[in-house]
Image 1 (cartoon, rainbow, N blue to C red):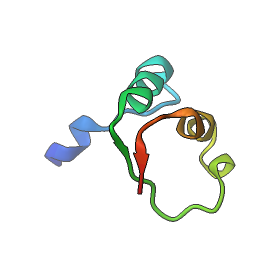
Image 2 (cartoon, rainbow, N blue to C red):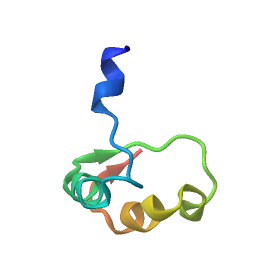
Image 3 (tube, rainbow, N blue to C red):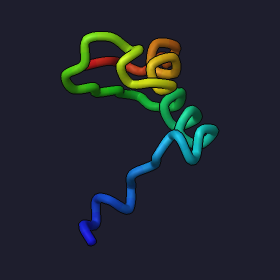
Image 4 (cartoon, one colour):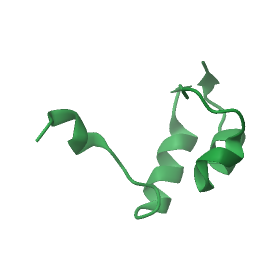
Length: 54
């Protein structure tokens, strides 16, 4: 198993942990989507997050 996969948190299964991590992030990097609604429940969390966006 790829070592990086151990750090993946699936928000659908661990909503509170995922929301807390997004809210606490210093930097948020998202790749290639046109609207926050395209990433489901994460979209609302990302819009509200205070971290720097790239």
